[in-house]
Every structure is written in C-alpha cells, then in structure tokens.
Length: 437
Image (tube, rainbow, N blue to C red):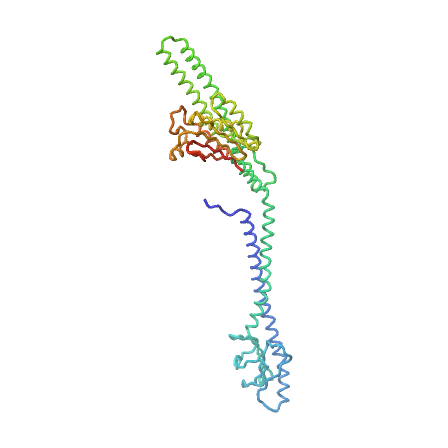
C-alpha cells in the first residue's frame, strides 16, 4: 500500500496554502479598491486640468492675432501624462499640449467624462460653447500604475511564503511531538510488548485513540495470558500421566520373561517417550505462537545459551561454543531464547554427522548453529520452517523444531536464515538467527 503524507506535512502545506490564499485574496481586494481609487484620482486630475486650462486658453486666444493651432511648450523635462486640446465651437484645434496626439482625440467629445479604446478624457466648454477644452490620459498609464501597485503588494509574498512554510513547519513539529512520541512507542510494541501506552500531553482529539489502543492491548494481554496458562496447565496434566504410563511400561519390561512380550513393552515405552517429546514440542509451539516473547527489559543472552548447552551435555556430542564480545543484550524473553537455541541445537544433533562437532557461535548481532552432514535440497530447505516438515533424514523427530524456532523469530522480530551446504563448506546445514540492530 502506498504510504501517504505525514500529518506534519499536510498541516504545514495546508496552513501555508491558507496564508497564501488569504494573502492573494487580500491583494485582489486591495487591487480592486486600488483600481477604483486610482480611477477617481486620475479622473479628478483630468477634470482639474480641463477646468484650469479653459480660462487660461480663453485669455490666450483673446491676446492672439492668429487663429492657427499652436502647441504649448512643455513645463520641465518630465513626461506629461495628461494632454489637452483646445477647440473652437466648430471643432477646429486652437491650442494643444506638447504630448497631445490629435489623431486619438475625438473631434466632438461629449461634455464630461468619456472613454475611448486608448484614452480616458474629460471635456468642458465655455463662453457659450465657442471654446472647449478636452483633457485626456492614456489608459495604459493607469493600468501600468495599478500593475506596479499590485506587484508591490504581491512581491513580498515570494519572500514571505518560504518563511511562513518554515515557521509553520517548526510550530507544527513542536505541536505534534506528543503524537510522535505516542507513535514511536506504539511502533516499539510491535514485537509483543503489551504494556499500556503513555498518553500524557496528547491532544484532546488523540487521547481517546490512546485509550482505545490501551484497552485493546489489555484485552489481548488477558487472552494471551489465558492461553499461556492453559498451555502450562496442559503441560502439567500431560506430563504426569505420560510419565506414569512410561514408568509402568518400563516396569512391565523388567518383569516379563518372554522375549516377545518384552519387545512389545519396549515398543510401548518408546512410543510413550515419543509422545512425551511431541507434547513438549507442541506446547513450545503454542508458546511461540501465543506471544509473551519480549521481556520488559533487555538482558544478556550468553548465560542463557551456556545453561542450555550444559543441560544438553548428556547428548554425548561435541558442542563447540564461541561467544564474541559477551554476546547480545536483547529484550527477547530468556525462556523464549532458551527454547529457540535448544531446538536449533537439537536439530543439529539429530540430523548432523555424529562424528563431527556442532559449531555454535553467538555474537552481538547473530546466533549461528552449524553442523556437518548431508546437503538439504533447495526446494526442501524452503519448507523446513513449516510444522511437521522434515529433511532427507532417518533420524527420529517430530518436524517441529525449526517451526518452533521460526515462530519465535517471527513473534520477537528476529530473522531466521537457513542454508545448506553451510557457508564456507561443501556439506552440512546452517541456521542463523539475526538480532535487530
């Protein structure tokens, strides 16, 4: 399943996007208001220019001796954005400003404000309509002024947006720290630790989730505890009658004088011993699959492995133990590790070369159990971690040893790797348990 965006990224981008959209909306509203205010300002300037030029132009025309159109010299070197044209009643041009483009001025403009495709103008007449003044401004000038003003409003957004994103990211990160701690603690419980999760300082919206998870883990812990209790009680109830039956079969073997009945009694005793071993393996498998594989605190595993090897000394096999750097310190339950190591070593004893030593190596990150013997075909090697699957051997066994080891590794977050032939050898079998780093 594709992993989605984190809540921190979503909040940071959403808040930054909201700030940006609000800024844009504010700039658009400001631009609309600015457009209206600019139009009013420039319209007022047009009207003022036209009304001021009208009496001056009239006085100028009275003092002139010619009726030819004249251009008024500019005042200063700055560009004039407002141009004007003075006409008589017949529409003849009498005066005009330096920058006035007569081709764009209408010959008979309406009185008051008017607009063309390129100009915004104002026209006023006097002396009973015998003289008129038209002041006009290029619309491009107005649009350019509004664009520059909007650019001044929008420009800072380019610099502020990254800063807003960084600030929002920092504040969201700080606000989500309790949730991050809750998530990290929840992830750490993925290896069988069912202790209650801490919910201190969690936001009000997330605190019920922590409560629901704790309630679920409590119910799961109760179910696993009941299963372990059942397994323990079953082990006790099964061991006693099987041991009693085995003792009776052994006594019957000793009391019988005929060879045929004695042989049948021996067969019964052997079957009872196999049943005892099978029940023990099934109980181990139930424990491995039921949980409780992680201890509350980390402990060294090397002493546990040495104890297991000491208990298996009666197998009359050479168990060569090599512990590097005092071995690993792990939160794997010591009893679970003992079951794991015992099953791997028993598998090597049963199916390995009886004349060769079994190499057991424990390092801070792995446990290796290697034996000499026949090579297991690759297609069969993949099946050995299933219950009741056995390799090419005639040795007695239930086919549960590697299945129990694999189940413990899965439940405890370890990795079990099988290889045949053993690494660096032409034959043999290797079981490697890798501890998490």
